[in-house]
Length: 264
Image (cartoon, rainbow, N blue to C red; front, side):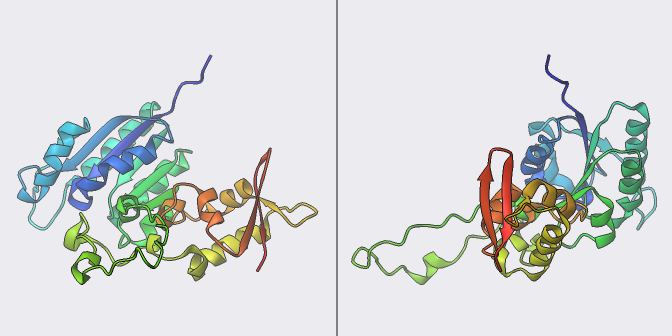
């Protein structure tokens, strides 16, 4: 008899979330379980939330209306927090996704984690570090939206034709002007000092075999203590794909998993 899948709740701060990211966000949360609770919070009379209306229908998201009762104050955050606590105390939710870049949700994420519930945060690279670290994982939605970097074979010199300069210009990103500064998915993993330090520290901290190889799963658990770390933030779906792209490690596949050794 198969085990029941975990029940996941996704709560969306529509004022501080990109509607174009909802599809990849749901894909990530599907790894935790089934996203049965899907709610988006906002004042739907605002023209600025128009981009969310189509997504609500397409992805079966329940809109939660919250009027701006006082000018300059946003009551949406409070409503979203109350609903999260209600869901937690009912005991039927096994994991939470919070789609926002607002630091006001830091106490909520911390409280949910204190109950042993994983919390996945989804926002931009401008999200405050306090909120990032309060989540079990925080994933940059721009990295989810970025297309995979596929290496194209180099054509023979005779077949190569000069391309017009205009054709070399990248198309506008779907986030337009809202796109945050360049994300880590655009950097070569072996050239990112912060990433390398994280991987080196994890490698140094885990047990190694006689040949100096460490189990990648054990490294991943240590690296996962930093909520800002996720392979998707660097343009890779899995940690195994990321580590294979780092020249400083040698990878060895075994029956009991992937093992890595630092070579420089």
